[in-house]
Image (tube, rainbow, N blue to C red; front, side, top):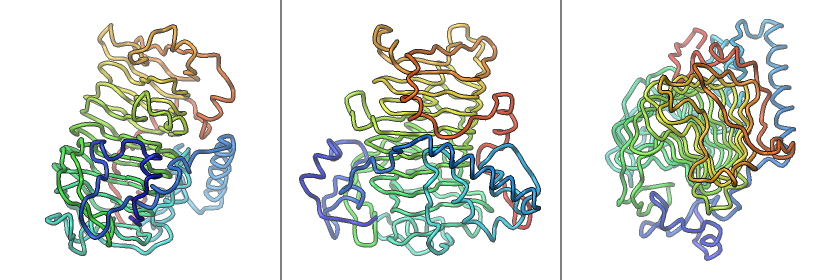
Length: 427
């Protein structure tokens, strides 16, 4: 994580960052600082022309399809991300192709594409201030872009939050990698991160400890909630093909002005509050947030927040919702929610059939919010309560790719979660 000296202006931009759980209230170490992104507007990833996003995605899919017709690839799943790379039996020699396959608002997240490969050989995390070479923590704190892979399958139990530096890819393909039973992943005030192919589960609250965030900086961390992936004031983030479950707080949280995010192809299970997008009703800088939720499977043992949105613009597209106990999609503070081509299977509980929930808000207020359902498949009595006047401008900002028919959701999401990839075979 590149560092700069702390300035009063940074405190004004970031609001109450020193008081928030898990925030970088550094006191000690070689420098007193915040990350490089903190000196910038953390909404740098906001899309000025979302229609351009959709057209670029369509072009990417068209080009990929044309290459398949020429014999470049030999399979097709209907999932545009997977069709971009999974058909290649030499995927392990072409790992960085993944960075060219992004869709949605986080499509420009290149991770460590421009850097060298780093192989994790050591599953240990004994010293969060002075991590050993070969460990995952040593890799993610480096200043240079890195594409991080794993020599073998391993379970990594982190002593403290894994604080990532910019331009990193964590690529678990070819091994079974668990981040489990300890702290988990923190993406704070950085940019261009890809998290792919991990099993993230049983994350615990940690903190009140020194943690290194770059080769030249470490500092004091306050208590972290125990999220699986915590995205805080970050942009150009892609979380793809991970299996997430049973963490102390959220499985994925994105707050404090984070934007340009895609959450795709993940398998979520056994958790209460699954995804939180937006810090608080009063934190208006999250109005610039744009997040794509695509091709995920929300599976057994889930209760609510798939996602729970505040402010901002959210494209929920071609996901499979097979379990919820309270509701699937919720929000407050006037978020724009564009639900397209999803499959919603309601639970048997007759009082939990509604897909949507406006949290702690009277209908006289939320009736003007733009929430729409377009070609969603509503099963077992599920119903989606729409609202708003359908402003084309509002929904344009919540549109990030072309939705496929909801009838295809089962096949599109059938391989959601961490994949079992073997060298020399299609993944």
